[in-house]
Amino acid sequence: MVILAVCGMGIGTGIVLQTNAEKAVRELGLDAEIEVTDLDAARTATSRSDLVLTSPDLARELGEVGVPVVVIDNFLDVAEIRERIAAATGHAPG
Image 1: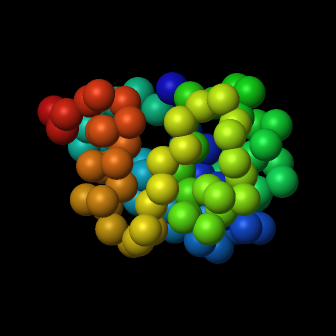
Image 2: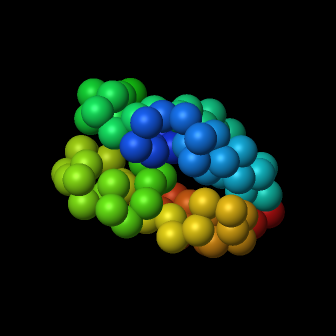
């Protein structure tokens, strides 16, 4: 599974989201690669991804991309990220 961590510039907050999403998928027992990308590149990168994680504002800007877009309010909250990924993928922690 490929998950995109989308931030405005593809650095900074994207790295924070990537790091915490990696923790979350480990806790869920998912085999997933988390890739960081900026908003513009995300529009084409979604063709090779299964899920997108991003902020509420960027989710609105991104629009419909053909894969689930999961809104994360707090990129520092691993529990929130885990819960949102679990809901989007149907995986419970394990």
